[in-house]
Structure formats: C-alpha cells, structure tokens
Image 1: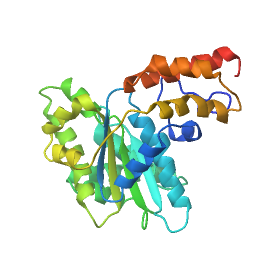
Image 2: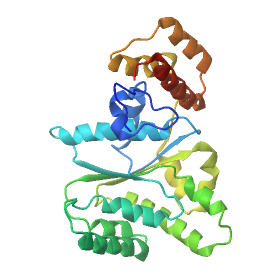
Image 3: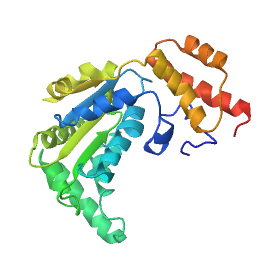
Image 4: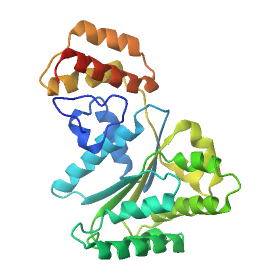
Amino acid sequence: MHLSAERPFPGLRPFGYEDREYFFGREDQVYALYRLLEHSRFIAVIGSSGSGKSSLVRAGLLPLIQEESEGKGGRDWRWVTFTPGDAPINRLADALLTLAPKEELADERQIRRERIGFALRRSSFGLGEALDEIPNLAGTSLLLVVDQFEELFRFGGDRIGDAVWRDEAANFVQLLLEIGRTRSRSVYVLITMRSDFIGDCARFHGLPEAVSASQFLVPSLTRDQREDVIREPIKKAGAAIEPALVERLLNDIGNELDELPVLQHCLSRIWERSGKP
C-alpha cells in the first residue's frame, strides 16, 4: 500500500514511485543524479545496504523525469524497473513487455513476449531488436532501471559450475552495455548495487569500466536533510511532532546511512502509536 496522510512512513521497505509525495531530504541528490543523464547512458548508483539507493531512484529520479515528460520542451520519457533475480533475461523481457499497449489481446501479448525473448537471446545487440518489437516508442527516451543488480552475483554464487547460468548472466550484462553504447537510440541504463559487490563486477567483460565511468555514490544525509526526513512527511500528513522528539531521533540515528531504514521503521511505529491512523 502506498504512503498517504494515514500512513506517511514506509517502515523497513524502500520508497516506491507511488510514495513520491512523501519522499523528502534528498532533493539535491535527486537533481545530481538527474544531471548524469545529460551525458551518461549507463549509470551505476552505488551505496551500502540501507543507504536508500532504490528509494532515491524510484521515489526521486523517476518522478523528476515524469515531470519533464509532462512539461513543454523536455524529453518524453518511458521507463521500466525490475530486478535480475535468477533469470535476468526473462526478467528483462517481462519488463519490456510492460511498455507494449495495454489493450493487446492475450494471444498478441504472448507472441510479442516470445519475440522479445528471442531477440534478447540472439546477440548482444538484442535489446535494440527487442525494442523494435514494441510500438509507440519512437521519439521517446527510455530508462531501464535494474534494481538490486548484485542479485547477479548472489545467485551466481549459488550456481558455481553452472555454465548455462554464467552464459545468461554474461549475455544480460552485454545487452545492457551494448544498448548504452548505441547512440542511435535514446536508451539509458541505470543500475543500483550494493557497494560490497563492486569487486564482483570484474566477472563480466566491460562492466568495471562502465561502472567506473558514471558511478553515483549515494552520499550521507546532512543533519538538516535527516530532519526533513522526519518532519516533512508529518507536516504533509497534517500533523506535527515535538521538537524534543526530533532532536532525540536525530541524536540517536547518527550519521550512518544504514540506519535510515531503522529511522523509517521507528517513525512508522511512532505514527501508529500516536493514534493518527
């Protein structure tokens, strides 16, 4: 369930696009990430577990490019988000299928899905060919968000010696890298990845160079930004919080990025105990 005046804090889960109106404290980071799209086709958003990588992209960047699409003179954006899981090419095919017209008949949609999957597996240029299977993308800019990219390494670790898995993972990475190099298409790739998996990028040809070229390391929040994280959702929900409690929360949370989910969980519990819901 998305956030609202009845429930302005997500707890331990990350923010999603539908929670954008209650996402505060990272405006500067959102615009810095957005500016990377001006000159980079492959962006890696890197941070420790709990640093807010997914939230920054889903509730910060995606609403911003949607605003650009709705304005005059800006790019017309489309986007998809997915995690690679244990079948990255299938996950990519399913994500691309969501760009197809919603009014398609089930049989038509299944045929399109098969064509997309076949194109993705045919060559490293298959992502461009797969996009050709989707109508109404002409003149648009497409952002492919691969969230929790480290799943490639985590699932790969469980499949040591599995040549089929290694080939699929390598093909998936090459699809992303190749589309990022194709200037004839306005396609951007953004991955989010935990910083402790940086070294694992060396498993795939070309990936370390791509990650290094346009890396966005999620910065720590300042004290003022952390205060916005606390105060602004409550204000938007039409309520108020005692200054002493704000100070207590700020002092207890410190400067560690991985404490942010704990703060959100604490705020959610405080909200519930206040009787506001």
